[in-house]
Every structure is written in structure tokens, then in C-alpha cells.
Amino acid sequence: MVTAQTPTNIAVIKYWGKRDETLILPVNDSISLTLDPSHLCTTTTVAVSSAFHQDRMWLNAKEISLSGGRFQSCLREIRARACDVEDENKGIKITKEDWAKLHLHIASYNNFPTAAGLASSAAGFACLAYALGKLMNVKEDESQLSAIARQGSGSACRSLFGGFVKWIMGKEDNGSDSLAVQLADEKHWDDLVIVIAVVSSRQKETSSTSGMCESVETSLLLQHRAKEIVPKRILQMEEAIKNRDFASFSQLTCADSNQFHAVCLDTSPPIFYMNDTSHRIISIAEKWNRSEEAPQVAYTFDAGPNAVLIARNRKAATSLIQRLLYYFPPNSDDLSSYIIGDKSIAKDAGI
Ligand code: DP6
Image 1 (tube, rainbow, N blue to C red):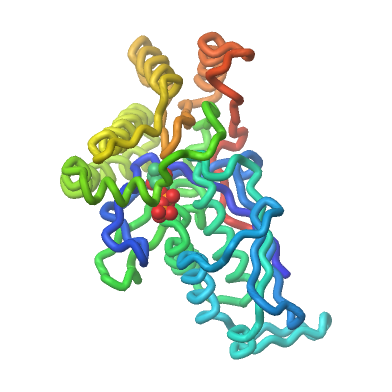
Image 2 (cartoon, protein in one colour; image 1 turned 180 degrees about the vertical axis):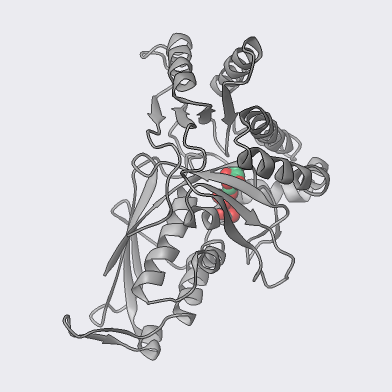
């Protein structure tokens, strides 16, 4: 039995659109930050026993079906790489061949709302790939494991690393070069503080998977973004991260979030992930940034109304929270809670 814990990640240059639905190959590179696991993480226990008669999985204590192609892809890829496991003290000996016949029980728990636009599938599939890899003594490194997690959910590949992570879209049709690499570890820029304003913890109406599929089919802006805009932004973002240049980082992060939501609006029928509260948060951040000599905060929104705000340092984070509390007093209906990352940028997946 192995238990692993994996933090979620938030993209600052977004992945939106696949060129291959089954292998989950994206139309552009993306860059993310791995978040503090004490607030947003998945814990997964995987167990193997000859007493198990089928593979089974529980998510937040409720049994879920493993028949979906994504789970099956991950299980198949990990099983194909399984190695012998031997522990004389515990009297355990499982050979490479045994793994193909043995069944697994998987119990996974999210410490945050599932499917509410807080990247629950990212932490979930990354944790699954990592825990299964440990259980089955898979020798592959994190990048190769990320290519397996990717087949569960695209954004999951970026949660195998801590700090700042890039998902390289790759060129191969079989997806072998579509994997995550670490750009900088969590110590590189530890001034940043992440504040998540939970606007709604309800499950979103349009999942990322179906939303991006509709965007690929109908949005011309998506094609332009993937070919012309993102390649340049990726280079600029890598430079901003390397130089800890908050002004560029903030400008690129906000612009990319806004363009992703513009692509959603450009989709037919249009997809609305943000709501009035999200828009108010954007205005508050923009006005504040413009009133200061240098930007103090970056904002980004995934496929949901919740705001992920990245403050340039602790002082800016304190001021940000004061502003949010002023505009959204504790009893207001607009925001349900705040999640504040004390370590802000997390390390990698771990046992
Ligand atoms: C808006 O990774 O959830 O969060 O690959 O279909 O599982 P699938 O989609 P998913 O999409 C995430 C989209 C996003 C942007 C991002 O994380 O880069």
C-alpha cells in the first residue's frame, strides 16, 4: 500500500484546446505554478492484494466507476512499466508479470471542492500516477510520469513538479514528447503569495473537457491564440519567471486569463465561466495596479468563477486581503471564503 499527496496547480499561461482527444495532446504549451498543498491537494492511497477481485476506486469516500478511458489509460500505462517488488521483512514478492493479474483499490480525497474550477482533476490524476508508480516500482522519472498523468487530465501533468512548471505540447503523434518540465523550483521566487477568492464551490456547468472541445471546433480566436499569441507569451513568461520580474509576470498572467475567457466567449454557443463577482475582482485588481507605481497583484481564472490572485509579496497580500474584505465584507453573498497560501508555491508530489 502506498499513500501520496499531490498539490494542484494554476496555469498562468493557459492550456485550452486539444489536437488529440484520446491521448490528450494540447494545441499550445502552458505554464503553471504549483500551489500550497495544505489548502489544495489530493491524497491518494493505492493498495494491491490477491484478495481483490477487480480494480475499484473511491473519491471522497464515494465509489466511482473506473470504466472511463482516462483511468484505463493511466492504469494501462503504469502497469506496462511495473517492475518487480520484493520486501523480505514483510514477506512481499510481486513480479513484473504478477502486476498484470493483480487488482487495485484506490482511495482518493480532495481537501477542496471537486470540479469547481479549482483544478481538482489536475491534483487527482497526478497523485494517481505518482502513487501507482511508487507502488509498482516504476523507474520512470517525473517527466515521463507526467506524460502518463496527462492521459488522465491534461493539466495533471504539471502537478508532478513543484514551483514553476511548463507543459511542452510536443510534436509527436504518439504524445511521447508531450510532457512537463520544471522551470524553477519553489524556492526560486518565494516572495509571491497566492490568495484564492472562492466565489462559488458549486460544480461548473460546462466541464473543461467539453468546453475546450467546443472551442476547438468553433472559435477562430483559439486558432490565432495557439499559433500566434501563446508561443511568444511562453518565451516572455519564462523570462519573467527567471528574472522575478513581477510587472511582466502580472501583465502576462492577467492578459492570458482574459484571452482564455475571450476564447470561451468566442465559442459557439458561448461559455461563461466568470460571473459578476469575478468581473468585480478583476476591476479591483486592475484599478489598484494602475494606482501604484508597479503592479501589486496578478489575477487568473480557470474554468470557473473563482479568482486566483498572486500578490507580489506579503505586504501586497495584506493590502489585497484588506481590499477584498472592504469590497466583499464577511457576510456578503458574493464570496464564500478565502484560501491563503502561506507557503504559496509548493514542492512536488510526495509520499
Ligand atoms: C482552464 O486539464 O481539466 O484549467 O485535459 O480535458 O482534463 P482535460 O482538461 P483540464 O483543463 C484545464 C483547463 C484550464 C487551464 C489550465 O489548467 O491550463
